[in-house]
Structure formats: C-alpha cells, structure tokens
Amino acid sequence: GLNGIDALAKGLFTNQTVTSLDLGANNLSDDGVRKLSAVLANQPSMKHLDLRGNAITGVGALALAKNIAQFQIGIVKGM
Image 1 (cartoon, rainbow, N blue to C red):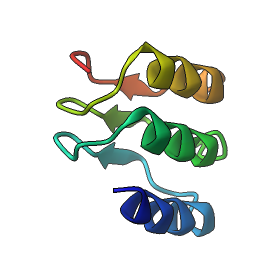
Image 2: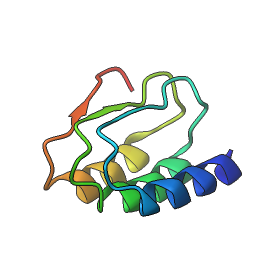
Image 3: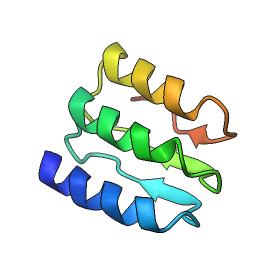
C-alpha cells in the first residue's frame, strides 16, 4: 500500500546508488506510482524499473514518464 511506498521512497531518497528496482505484482496504484516517480526523478543511477502486474493506468504511467524522462531507465513492458 501507500505506507510501503512511503517507506521505499524514504529509503530511495537517502540512497541514490540503486540501479535496479523490481516492484512487479505489488498492487501499486496510480497514487503509489506518483509518489515513487517523484523520488525516481532524483535517481540518476537507476537503469531498470519493473512495474509489471500492478494496477497502474495511463494517469500513473504519464506521471512516471514525466519524472524520469531525463534518464535512460529501462522499463519492463506490460504494465
């Protein structure tokens, strides 16, 4: 849920060396992806993000795309 995303976001905020993140099948919603994407905007080392099997709509995907557009992050298809 959002509490888990808040904890993850806090950890990512203090650790900017994460290169890969697999959050597949975690029931993430658009709200969760918005929170996550705000933190990912400050993760230049992130190269791989897996969000397969979540409840993300076009709204969440757009928020994610806007926040990480400047990085070369490989997003696994099939959200």
